[in-house]
Length: 368
Ligand SMILES: Nc1ncnc2c1ncn2[C@@H]1O[C@H](COP(=O)(O)OP(=O)(O)O)[C@@H](O)[C@H]1O
Ligand SMILES: [Mg+2]
Image 1 (cartoon, rainbow, N blue to C red):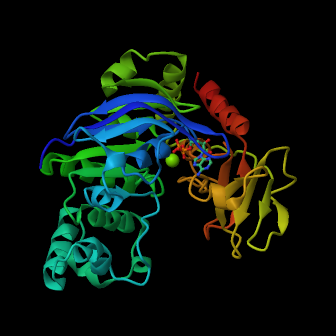
Image 2 (cartoon, helix red, strand yellow):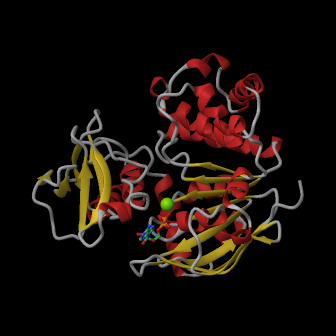
Image 3 (cartoon, rainbow, N blue to C red):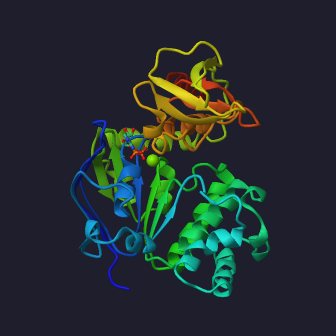
């Protein structure tokens, strides 16, 4: 199978609109390791990940896998050697679980029967009952869908697994289950895994090595989790680590945070303010016909450009939820505004980061 280390050599990515998403990234992912890219939203984690399988091409520098410049490897061949798991499971809605998992093996020429057997085996590998194989994605919980997404990525037994915030959209209890499962998989399957998250706790839990990204696509530190916690390389890392460790303790605290208004746009281009008057901001939230948030757009960028980059963020806030969930929602949102929804997923308004931090400070003060 060879060596599947991944190397970034002085890699830069500037998008056509002039945004530099990744700036001079040089980093080695050892073969067989689980390496985490962590940092706040917009700091180039997804862009870096996608340069590994050529979903994004670098503007400068090279990405190598197994010592080979990936730009010289045909895309189809490259992607066959890399499983890819996204935040939204990306399952095909009109295919059953088994059909979803078997798609790639079938494309690779496996018989229907062999692909089906493999799919059922994989269901067990990722902790699901074989009996779920005949269901459609909509008949599964969010956590089960993410597991199927992982099974699908593993189906062709690729040596490299790329995971982009795969567990962000599921609730904390299920997330903990999925994290345990991944650690277990890592022991059993010898794969080189690159895992993206905005959650420092998750990074520390899962990573053999952790790369902390800062705004502008700068690599702030790349080291073992212990080293990052004990000796943060600079103020940015220490703020990021400190803030995150501080709010682990907030998991169970709830506190009312005032809702603020946000400007929305629907598929027909109609705008409205939801949750009150929208403050001055470049960000507009796209909603669907049911009033559920779809993604952020900026007044200067068209929805097409931002399609993938500015999805609404993994973590939505439910009023009455914990401060941790509110901060998580703000941190995972490209606009920095936490999106608040009701039990049916309909937009209620947003939480401004300053209001979230103020609520956290109040709770901290009341403890002292
Ligand atoms: N297709 C694109 N066109 C223009 N800008 C983009 C595109 N994709 C990402 N960006 C911008 O590049 C920066 C890094 O984005 P991304 O890699 O998605 O960060 P992260 O995954 O850390 O949130 C952000 O400023 C984002 O707005
Ligand atoms: Mg991302």
